[in-house]
Structures are given as C-alpha cells and as structure tokens.
Image 1 (cartoon, rainbow, N blue to C red):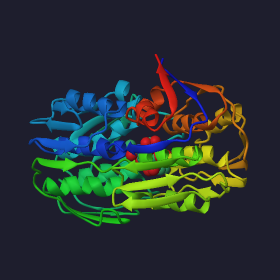
Image 2: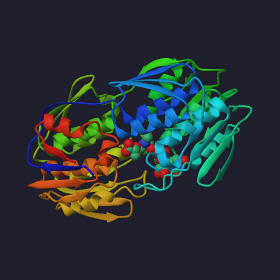
Image 3: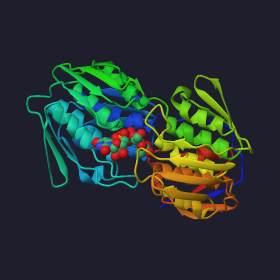
Image 4: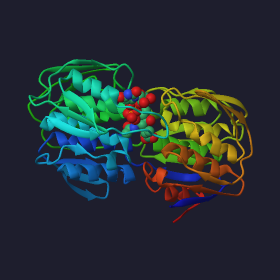
Length: 418
Ligand code: EPZ
C-alpha cells in the first residue's frame, strides 16, 4: 500500500492548477445511461472513483473511450441494469445509477452501500423519492430492486433532509417521467446545477437547479451531448488552505471563486490574505498571525463538510480556540486523533471539536481513514517539524489527481512510497 513521506517546513509558492470536480463528474457519467446516443464529457479528473464508475457503466452496457480528461460514453442499450456489491462497497456514489436505470429501462438492481467511515449514509431518501415517482421498490439480500414497468410519473418530492446525490438521482429519474416533478428542499450544490446543465443539453426540461425547488417536465427521450465539468471546489479549497497553513504565496488556477465564498470568508476572518486576480483564480498569502475562528459545516452555500478536516488542520496553527461543528455527517472527526498524534490540541465533544492553538506539530506515522481526512493529514505534515509518513493514501487517490506532484510543484517536500 502506497504511503506519502512528507518533510514539513516549506512555504508553498507559485501556481497550482485545479482539476475537474469528482462530485460533478460522477453524476454526469451516470447521466449518460439516460440516452442511446453518445455523451462526451470534458475535464473529467483522473481519480480512482471515476475509474470505478466507468467500470460500473461498462458492466451495465456502456462503451467508453477515454482520452486524457475527455470521456466518451455510448449506451445503445442497457445490458445489465445492476450495480453489484463489489463495486458499490468501494464507492457509494455508484447508487447514482439507480434513477437513470429505472428511468431508461424500467428496472434496476442496486446494492445498498452499507456503512461508511464518516457516517451511516443511508439512501432512504433516494428510495422514497423513486417511490413517489411510482417505482415499486423492495429490498432483498442487500440489494434494492426497483421496477416501473409502465415508466415513472411526475410527482412532488419533498426531501426531509437536503441530500446532494439524492437530488441528482431524482433529477435523473424525473427527466424521462410522464408529467411534472417538483423537488422541494433540494440540494443547491454547484454540482447539482452542473448536472442540470448537462441534462438540459440532452433535451431535458429543468428549472430551478441551484435553488431548493427544482421543476422537471418529463420528455419522451434524451439525445447525446457534449459537456464540460466544473472545477473541483474541494480540491481548490484544499490547496488554498495549503497556502495558508504553510505561510506561503500560492495561486490556485482554473477554479471558480464563486463556489468557494464560505471558505474564503473564513480564511479572511482568520487573517489570511485571499485575493481574486481574475475570474478563474484565487491567490492566498499566509500570515503568521493566524487567528482561531469558529466554523459550522452546512449544506451549500454554507461551509462544505468536505473541507472541515482541512480547516481543522489549519486551526491547529491559529492563535486561540476554534470550535468546529460538523452537522452533515455523524462520524467525521477521525482525523482529529491522527492530528493529535502530531501534537495538535483537539478535544472532541459530540458534534464539536475544540481546537486550541497554536501548537507546534512534529512529524509522525499517521493513518488516513477517508478521503478528506487524508488531505488534512497532508496539510498538517506540510507544517510539521521533521518527517511524517501517511499510510493508506489510497483514500486520497479516490478524489485528488496527482496531489503529490501538484504540491511538489509549489515546493512541498512530498514523495509517494510504493
Ligand atoms: C455528497 O455525498 C458528496 N459525494 C460528499 O462528498 C459530500 O460530503 C456530501 O454530498 C455532502 O456535501 C458526492 O457528491 C459523490 P448527502 P452524498 O446525501 O450525496 C443523510 C467527498 O469527500 N442522508 O448530501 O452521499 C446522509 O447520511 C464526499 O467527496 C440520509 O439520511 O451526501 C448525510 O448525513 C464525501 N438519507 C446527509 O443526509 C439519504 O437517502 C447528507 O448526505 C441520503 C442522505
């Protein structure tokens, strides 16, 4: 298993380009199942979760061609409407094929995702929504069996809780349903709006994506399309924090600053200088007088839970006490113990983490538990005295494209040990 070996103490300088968004690419790839015509997706990040989704789509019946960051998918027919446990257990976003399969061929067999390091993460809201659209769903042997032999029909779906992939899954189900569907309390994440843009290019009729009420008029069939995925705001945010925590001067290019306003506001409150040289880049200049600032994770446009771990690493270096509240996932503080192994002062109390700083971090052997936790350990290692060895970096490869070479480009002393 690969490890990262990082020697801390270098202020990062220069430019780091951002890749396309993993969480936008995954539903876009699944959306290709909705049509028998080719779909061409650009700026697809080359990360492990994308390869997993591509493997799943091939098993379902898609032909895929990959050239650099462009993926061409063609699904003349659905051969096997199934997402097997072997794949779903490695990537719960596989459940994003549920809606498209039921909509396209009237049935689907999708493994339940099971537990996850950061929380229970059930898909009951996906199922509830599909049942509102008239699908018959039963569960057996760890699988969801969904059927709609006469097709889906539009309905009003009110989500009890905001769910990103739940909104995306139902949007993809509703585009081929008879009549109108209204999704209420829908997720407003930019990835949802980017998916709606793709579906619109395929001939879908969607209004209100990006707001909490989305209206979808079902159509007979969808066409092929060509579409570019948005920048990865979580990857960009991770690098912004890398610049801040090392006291460096870093420009993050190819990003969308509008999607990152909650993070930028927090960094500025903490005394970090963040400027926007142009519409697709942000410049961060770290400051030794980092101040502790409380933060609560929220659904978009609030502070992203996928940046909570990275922000915690930053607050270990700030003057004062920062209270971090995680409201989205019930078990997303696994990185705190590993940061404490490096010398951080963090006390956990239910949904809260109380971070006292600044504390000097020293290099140590640590273990990554999930994708974003591993990113926070990389950030901590960049400021730690001495060498840190991060185990299980396969977690980070799921969602970051060549992170070690991007960071090394900006001066980081980081290498991968196979
Ligand atoms: C998406 O996951 C992202 N993944 C996650 O990013 C991200 O953390 C999350 O949204 C929140 O922003 C992708 O887009 C592929 P949710 P998703 O449904 O859709 C509960 C990363 O690091 N819930 O919005 O699975 C759920 O348990 C990943 O890139 C139900 O109870 O998250 C959670 O507590 C990690 N029932 C909350 O809602 C449901 O049916 C929000 O989850 C669905 C969700």
